[in-house]
Structure formats: C-alpha cells, structure tokens
Length: 405
Image (cartoon, rainbow, N blue to C red; front, side, top):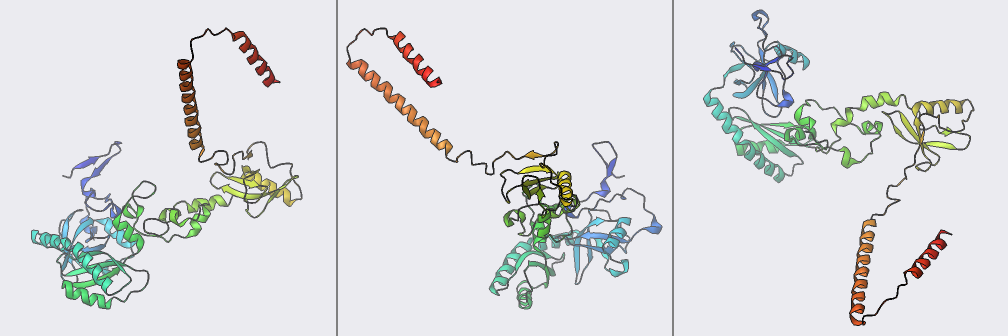
C-alpha cells in the first residue's frame, strides 16, 4: 500500500506514486495515480524523460509494472537509451493529444527496467559529457564556426551523442560532424536551441529575487516584443528590459493584456485639454490607477495637474462642444503636482561635505580662542575685574531691540 503525504491544510493527501524524481520545470502531477486502473481502458504508453527537457513516449508492450520515477531502458536508433518514467496511466493519452501526437505515430517500446549494467554504462556516459563539450568547443573554434556548443548528451549505451548548440544564423557544420565522429568514435547528432532554452538549462536568479521562470516552470517560449514595454509605459532601456539570455524578459508579457484592457478606458494622448486660462498637454499616465497628468508646458512638470481619466474625458467632451471649463479640478480627484521636477534642486550633492568643513573650522576656531585666552591669563597679573554686567545687559538689550525693528 502506498504511503500518503498529508497536506498541511488538512484538505486531502498526496499519493506517493504521483511524485517522482524529475525537474520541476517538466513536472506533471499524476492526480490519477491512486485511482484503480481499468484494464480494459489501460493506456500502454508511458512518458519517459531524458536530459535537457527531452521527453518522449514509448509503448509498454511487455506489460511491466512501471511507476513514476522508475529508470527504464528504451528503444533507440541505434542501440538503447536510458531514461526516467515521468507519467503513466490515462494522463499519458491526454499529454499525447496535447502535443498532437497520435498513438500509432510512435512505435518505439520499453525494453525493461534498467539493470545494474545499464546504470553503469549510463553513469560512464554521463561522466564523459563535460570533457566532450569542452573538446567540441575547441574543435568548432578551430574550424571558425560562428556557433556555441552549450551542452552534450550521451545516449544510455554510449553509442550516440547529441550536441546542443546556439547560433544566430545557419551554420554549415558538416565538416564539424566528420571531425567529431573521428575524435569521439560515436554517432553525432546536432540540435539547435535558442538563448532562452540555454538560460533555462543553466538557471539563475532574476532581478525580482526569484529563480528564472525558464528554469522552473516555463516549457514553451512566446516571442516578446518591445510593444509590451510601451503598453506598460516602461522605459525602453535595453539593460533593464533584457534578461540573462540577452533577450527581452518573458515577464513583459505577463501583464500586457491587462494594460491593453485598461488603456481602452484612458483618454487619447494626442488631444490636449483646454481651459479658460490655458491649454494642458499630456505628460504621463498611470494606466492601472486610471490617472493622467497634464502640464501647460510640453515635457515639463511645472504646473502639472493630475486628474482621473474620467475627468479628462469629460473635459475633452466639453472642448468638443466648444465649452472651456474654468479649471481641470473637479473638486474630487484633481491634485496639483507640488514636487519639484528635479529632486536634487533643493539639495546639493556636496551639502554634507560643506557642513562637515564648516563644523571642522568652527571647532578649530573655538580651540584657538580657548588657547589664546589661556595664554593671556598666564601672562597677565591677577587684577580685580569690575562688575560691568549691568552695562553689558543694557547693550545686549539695545541690540536686540534694533534687530526686531
């Protein structure tokens, strides 16, 4: 009987057969694992995962009792390969339908559960992958090919090697294949991957502080255009918009649709607002908050007024009918921008240095005064000092009155 993993919220349990050793990026939770199988409708296909997000489907013609996480030897061309079972049961048919793969299209089958000899060959093949990649890069550099070999994957029996490479354009690697086959004595297969796939394979931490989406959960990559940044009023700074793959960040597409819907309720940026006193021009907008900022001078924050999009549309409608309101303020949502255009206008960057210099000079002057007074007291004979306090107080009082006047 399988062990159940109880959820912390007490809402149910997780079947141990639903979990397995595989990458989070390609993980598929088998929520039918603890459901008794119907032999009449049992699916004979299983999903097997290999290195670098490579998956395929194989027929379990021998009727092996396979579960998620089992290591199996499967049919390959030529020889056999070794992979990990990631999905069994009815969900395999749904996954095949999602990828538009018909059951009859894949005739490859599962040979057996991996034996000790299979695992030994598999481990030996994986141990050679890094050295093979370094040597292949040197060979490609010697042939002056504009490509980068990002990874190498050996087949389970060690008779075939897949070289994953990145290139901007088409690369004639026929000579490279010949050299690689002579050096490594294996069958060579070249597979091109994109920069996003390469970043997902390497992994890392993004500017948001979380792991890269391409390395955790993304399995398909949608093209990202600069229009997504323009819709969200993001500055077109390549250094901030580019991810670790040197392409536009995938997260720019996450909220693009929301901004498109919210922008439909915003006023046109080309139409100015006219009042009885002056004309206001569009300056900036907070699309999600529904607020727009207008200024009497184009591109300047001086005299800028922030108001709601509804109020801006009302003023536009009044201007269209030949009416000019007294002001943009509707008494509720308009606010004048009191902040200076430049936050450093009121304070200098060297203000702390000046204050520090003044403080040092003041302390030095005070020290010199005390030292001079000590010297004078030591040199002069002791004399009685007349009490002239009332006179000093009178002088101080007259000075204070003069300042007040």
